[in-house]
Image 1 (cartoon, rainbow, N blue to C red):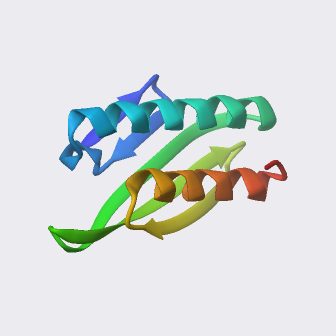
Image 2 (cartoon, rainbow, N blue to C red):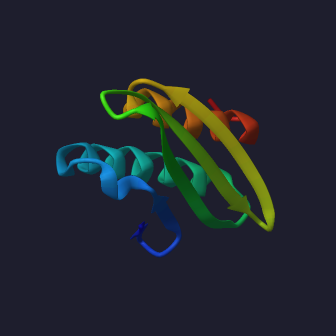
Length: 101
């Protein structure tokens, strides 16, 4: 159920996505993680959790992002019909809380 990227990034609930979407998700998360690691005191871990809400033919994606920075959690949640938009909203929400757009 959990996909690990590089040891300090975890994707939870993403195995349900098809492989082409998963490749894009990994690239997006990797890019955000690089930016976050540059702006944090001690980048410990980034966990992104995907939940699908509603019927299989018309569901929303709920994404939870959690960054551990020097023992301090920074969290963000986003919901959208498009998994990429929801992912971008959740991760940019963490960046905004860190003080960077």
